[in-house]
Image (cartoon, one colour):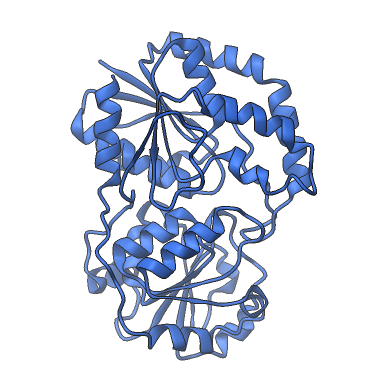
Amino acid sequence: MSSILYYITGHGFGHAVRSHQVIRALLSADPDLQIHVRTQAPQWLFANSPTPVVYSRQTLDVGIIQRDSLQMEITETLESCRILYRGADDLIEQELAFVRAHNIQLIAGDTPPLAFEIAARAGLPSVSITNFTWDFIYRAYLDEHPGFAGLIEQMTAYYGKTTLALTLPYPCDPSMFPHQLAIPWVARRSSLTKEAARAKFGLPQWATLVLLSFGGLGLDRIPWDKLKQQQQFLFVITGAAKHAEDNIIVLPDTQNQYEDLVRAADAIVTKPGYGIVADVLAHRLPVLYTDRGEFAEFPKLVKALRDCTICEYIPQQELLAGNFAPYLTRLLTKPAHWPTVDLSGAQVAAAQILALL
């Protein structure tokens, strides 16, 4: 039996969601494969695999520390990175023991830099599956936070030891990887019709349904009373049941069936992240997007939205004022623009990984 160790950043849900699609493709291609997932992302994100993964919690990167989906704490992020990398040698030794104990034969990552240093020290092939790297993201903060400089240098060196980088569409400077292969979008897809998806969640068929999607961190600063005045729309959110009334429907957390909720919607309001962009592409769902702070991935994903979807921009101050109606009306009256997009990235990634075993 072959064993793969898959390290996944705990930053948001999107990395775990797309990694799970790759894992599903791997297990569909080789049901006897054993996959160990080490991450801070919650275990329930890896449910519904063809065969179960072996899940354990581990932190190999910091990502960006955030108050909510739109507010980032860069000073705190820098300090947490310093602490993590001061203990990097001990952490690597701990992970090398894990590799030996579980007879790991390949390490995949999305995309903690330390994953590839661990693979190099273990003498194992490694595969990165990503659209950005953390050295690229942190480089944008150097002017105000020069303390990132040494950390970035170390991360770039670790990424440079990757055997193969599978770069997703609209990548952010993958030049640190010595060997790269561009792959299509990795996306989850609902098997339901819109009508069946609405029936599944008890949502009315007649409504103009708007899904509010701000990832695992949520966004409690939206003035819900203002949304209740916009009766032409039925707003759907997950969690935070205190907001449920009138034209606001709250569902329990549905992340492990979120593709069906996306299928049920007429539009989505969100900040651009890879996962949600892939969702709207897969389901041809119009998207109203806002800013997400100084995050270097943002321009790439906005370009993807403008190239491949029906989209409209809402300034963050308008979003936080609850002034959705004019922007949604403009979005929903735009002509259809849905170019064909290849969504086979999970299968392509799985084939490349299996070829290295």
